[in-house]
Image 1 (tube, helix red, strand yellow):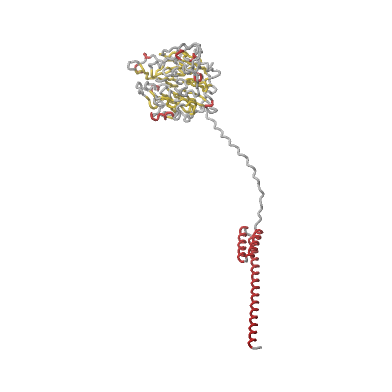
Image 2 (image 1 turned 180 degrees about the vertical axis):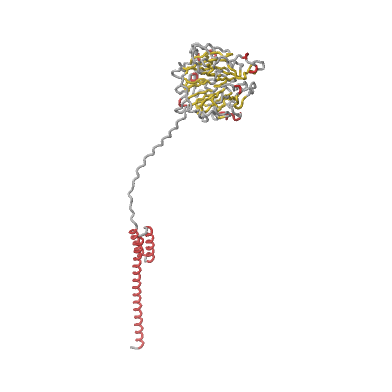
Length: 557
């Protein structure tokens, strides 16, 4: 073979040998790689199993976390197909490793019972501090009845009654009045079965009920004859005012029990057994209607007076009222223009007087009383205090007596009564009366209309104030009325009544409308026994006096 051709063949053989060697090396390399991969896979599997054993000892939450991380590592290292297979395998492993959730049996809740309505709290039993009178009374009336104030209905002979007459509309056995209060031109009565009856003038709501009537009007002067006759023809009076009628029970809370009634000129009040006070009507001032309270001019139906609690007794003047509570404190309200409230009321704030308030009296007051424009209080020690209008010395205090518009602004000790043990006090427009423990009937104040029942000519000059003509006009010091052993007294505007311990009535003073019950329109100058067939032999126990009429009561036989 030529040398060149032999060299080429040797080079080709060498290249083939090198290629074969390279292929063998590549094959060995691939085999080694496969072996390494298998070893790594085996190692990984072994590690995973080891981890699985370890993870079983830990909480399921940690196991899931580590297994997920291992699966993620494998997925990154493996091709996509392998990653999907490994992901599926990992999911299977997790499913096997995760604790099987045990489903709890479904509990069906029992339906809730409907909530029972809460029972209303039981009202606290009221604290009873007063008791009602129980003695049934016969009621006798006399005087002017042209506005129904006598309570005799619509009969013609109900207009002017000259002497006391038994009221046939108030029979003791069926109606059973136990107390009567007399106002200016109306009356309020309490019955044994807890009714409040009213009659008379209702122009400003003093009756506490609706008295609307569409009847006619006529001239009352047509009937100016002796109305003691038995003529029962129609008088033209409003039957709803002239007939004693009960205030509807719906006007008061259920269970209310009354123990006392009181009446002013155009106002009325009722006291309950637990010391609450209801009122209706209005108070008047010199300028007309003042109001019942700060928001109501006229209160036509009963209203609770919330400022008054634990009250034991009431007293009324013409346009003011007093209330005594169980601790001996006194409250006043109404018009204060004559200082009858015992506290100064500024004219521009005069409505402030309509709010009941305590004022400058000492504690432990045991009794109260009113005149038309003045007031009294008896202390537990026996001392008497007075305040209000004093132009005629009606308070029993000399200061200002005889001067126009003189007044005692604040409660002041009545020294002229310091030697007397006074049990009761009352007053008219300008005079006053008192009953003492030894039965004296004391009188003082204006006397030029015979309001005191004393012989004027026999009075010492030192005890009177005279007018410009030299005639006695004012009795300064309390003076006893001779012949009367008194148990109770009452005062109208200008007349007076006393009941003695034998149950007889005495009267004196202004009598133009027969209010003295003496059968005459002439003034009664001195105290005189009231005597007619209606009351003769009866043991009278109480009296009330209005402006033009009077009321007497006696226990039913």
